[in-house]
Every structure is written in C-alpha cells, then in structure tokens.
Length: 176
Length: 176
Image (cartoon, rainbow over all chains, first blue to last red; front, side):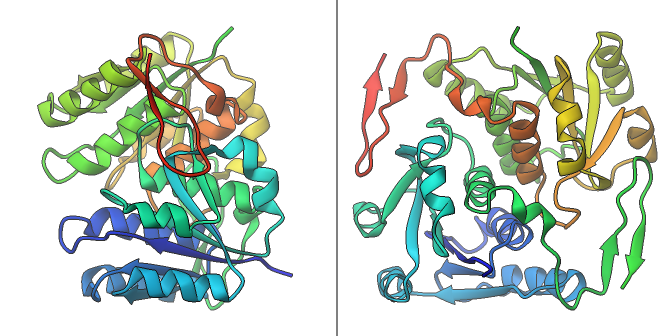
C-alpha cells in the first residue's frame, strides 16, 4: 500500500512567506506527499503557482488552506495519521527514522516563525533534522526522504504533460 | 579524512533572493559543507545573518562572494574538487550517489533562475534530485545527505556557544 503523507505548514504569513511556502509546497509534491495544508486564509499566489506545476508535471497533489490549525491537526490525527512535528529541539531524526518508516499515514508539520507550545503537545513525535538552525524546506526534504526511505525518488506522477529524460549534459524535456 | 565540501550558489540576486540564499547558506553549514561561495557582489544582509549563526552555533563555516563564476569554478576544479551541478535535467541522484560518496573533495553547484549552458559543461556531473521542479534548497539538502551518506547528521561544530539537547517534548538549549 502506498503511504499517505500530508504536509502541514504552520504559521504562513501572506506576502512575506510566499516564496518559502511555495518551495515547501513543491518539495511536498516532489518528495511524495499527496497534500499540503497551509495555515491561514487562502493565498492565491501560492495556490495558483503550485497548481500550475501540478497540472503540467502531474499529481495527484492538493494545496489546501485552513484557518484553524488546532481543529485541522486534531481532525488529521483522528483519521489515523501520526503527527510528526519538525523542530530543531526534537529527537534526532537518525534515531527515530526506523519508527517513522513503519507508519502508513504520516502528517509532517513544519513551522515558520515562532511555534506555539501546544503544537509540541499535539505532535506524536517532535523530530529534529541536525539539531542546528537552517531551513524548514531542508528539514521537510530530509524528513520525507526518511519517511519514504529514499523511495520517493522513484515516484511517478499521474496526468503529467511533460517529463524529463535524465542527461549527463543538456536538457531533454519530453511531452507525455 | 573528513570530506572537503564547498557549495557554490550561482545567480544570486540581491534583495530578491536574500531569504532563499540565506537558507542555502544555513543548509550548507548544517549539512556538513565548510564553505559557501555566492556569485555576485558582497550581500551584507546574507553574510552577517549567517556569520551570526556560525558564531553562536559553531563552525568552521565561511561565506564568500565571488563576482566571476567562471574563474571561481575553474580555480576550485584546479584544486581537485569534483564539480557536481544540481539541475532538474541531470542524471538521477539515486543512480550516481555511490559515485559521489567516493569523492573526497566536492563542490556542489546550485542555480537560482536561468543557468548558462556553460555551467553544465564545466560540471563533472549534472545531477537531478527527483527530476521534478521544486527548490534549490531541497536539492542541496538531499545532495549533501547523499555525498556524506547520512553522516552529516552526526557532525559536531567547533567553538559553539550553544547546543541542543534533543527532547521528545519542549526545548532544551545548553550553553557550551
């Protein structure tokens, strides 16, 4: 059975975070998640740019906005997802990745600026990637890689209009 | 012997790219590179924010600006570094990661917007992470993880003033 993976982006701020949140969406899609939920009112710039990519490169992948993170995370949890909150302060990912790989339904939570204490409590696992300050995009990338045990790199996308034929040099984009 | 790894950020644009380039710097540091070279004139905002992190969380890690990418990449190559250019169009990283792990000196090149053809030619390896559109921060993260074969997660930093004691819940920051 294919794993069901959702990414939850906590604390998105319109305008200021658009570019970083767009990266998070594209990473979620490319590294095997089926959906990203973004806290806050609908940000059309983010949604349209990501939907355009999904339309061209394939899916399924969904971008959803959710004003109430508490209600949303509780609903996800009630559906049987394990909540994995990425935080610099959590347990080292290399110590828990075996455990993460065992779950069929995972919701990876990534913060932006300051994260409320309650998020740590709602999470089943608070997990750190390197225990150093860096980037929520990087933390998400490595966490998805560990959740899927590297198999996300083999993912194929449905309904793609184009795909890449890998080359040592040059670019080869094929129409599908 | 510890691997010598440099990250080369191609096509940085002042102001517009500051946040994404800062993420690239912090990822380079946290995931085991000793240096990032950024194409373009000195961008004080980026340099100062990253140097502040290195001062507090440890190093060694250096942020350098270089106006002439051709000269810089050629000099790096002459010092025995393998040039690994990350591009959506390159060979799949899962097919070349064994090879990458064999190199003692690696320079990982990440682009921003449009990359000139010549970069593909200067590179010893053009490598793709997922062959899907996403984020140079994510590509860098996964590439460094594969270059170091996961061992970057165990890296310790010299001269750190603080470090994190990993926790299942809460935050524990220790003075070193």
